[in-house]
Image 1: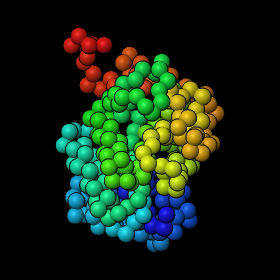
Image 2 (image 1 turned 180 degrees about the vertical axis):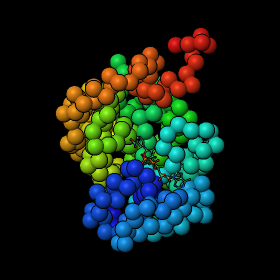
Image 3 (image 1 turned 90 degrees about the horizontal axis):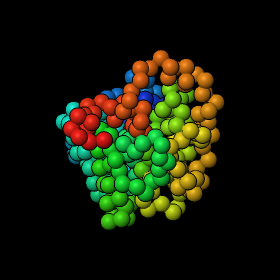
Image 4 (image 1 turned 90 degrees about the vertical axis):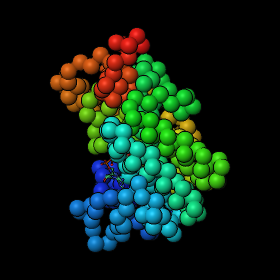
Length: 269
Ligand SMILES: NC(=O)c1ccc[n+]([C@@H]2O[C@H](COP(=O)([O-])OP(=O)(O)OC[C@H]3O[C@@H](n4cnc5c(N)ncnc54)[C@H](O)[C@@H]3O)[C@@H](O)[C@H]2O)c1
């Protein structure tokens, strides 16, 4: 990969990757709807709104691979999700295809499968079970990825990211934590592994309490270094300060499941 595009450059993950990917790929083009406040003089940045096809066509021109992080990264009103994650994600895959981009790594989310119970260990081959409009948009992005991979020969890797950060911050994060350097490994597999048509990996570190079977990622060489258990005491201390959440504590998606939840009042589960 000579030239890669990373969207979402001004966000939490993008800002960290701007340091971690330096020197790994010779030309990295960073993009976001807003310019990162701490953009360095040697970083290439092009502003673009993902919901505008003409702007997306400009940022994908001439790149070999895309790491697609940009979008609405939490639950939100339908129109915000629609513009940034549904239309935006379509624009990115379609523009990349037209520009003959070979590879896309898509930042999906655990919220695409958030309504699986914590008592069930899941792999990547089950049906999606989104816990929010946001989760639906990630499932949509994964489906788009499959379309462009199987119909148009693009190599697509979907990363169902758990929670990216320096340490797991509560009990749920002990199961889903992703150390920044481990995300770099997953991105590199997606951009460089010769045998990828369409793959889904969990974006999680080496967490003993994991709800996910990430053997598919390991099959492609993923060797996560982060161990959530090293932070158990501090995560559980933080958990003790949180109010109980009878629905969120039952399902993998946590508060994304309990927010707006009324299945019990309507005769559901
Ligand atoms: N942080 C996590 O733990 C986590 C977990 C699961 C999935 N993800 C996914 O990873 C990606 C990055 O996450 P993050 O935590 O850095 O999120 P973030 O919100 O910090 O960054 C997202 C970036 O996308 C940009 N953006 C939003 N709408 C846009 C548009 N219309 N056009 C162009 N850019 C737009 C924002 O300006 C922002 O800088 C997101 O897609 C998110 O859904 C993150």
